[in-house]
Image (cartoon, rainbow, N blue to C red; front, side, top):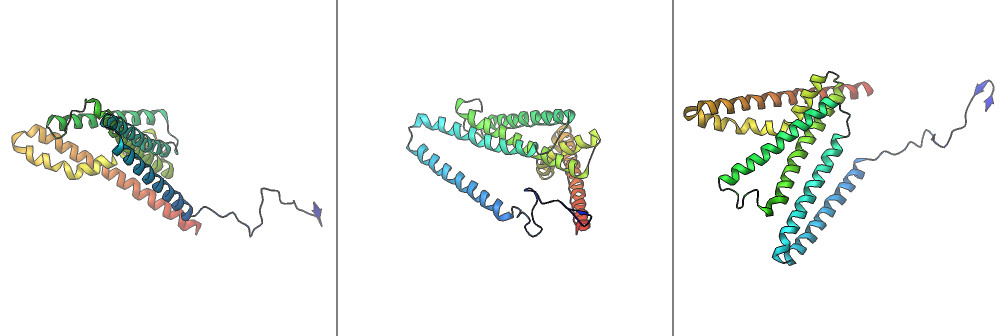
Length: 237
């Protein structure tokens, strides 16, 4: 309508009064759904344990495999959901797939080495371990995908546009957990093999230095992201 030379429009259904702002979902809402999820997982686990305890021995292996498949699939689902929150390019996808392949191969090689040392009760190629191997590979891939999502988060917040910088951020994010563990674990074989096998000690030393480099990259990106967020909050305040 037009009144006294000033044009006004009636508020539509999508507009709200100034005093009736939509209430955002607070932390209580998320906490409620997290509580429901944890409670549901506990109930399902208790039911599954009861069914497994009352089942004949030949069915327990099938039930265990089913549980391993289901657990690994749930973890992988959330990892993929976290990854697809951000956009990525073809080169970055190739880097993610390459690191995933190497991570799964390293997991299987480690398990094979442990089986050769007699630390596992049955070989990894045993039929009863199919579900466990699948679960471990999925969990390894899920941790790597979560790290890729973390690297993509840094790229989005810091607005990294160069392909090399984005790939380095993503790969460093995927290797964040192995690198952190390697900083503490790799000096042990370096010291043990320094006299008997210097070539092997040099390899472990290079892995240790690579772990320090990856951890340093992740630390710098995390500090930059945190600092930028605080600057944005200060400006908005």
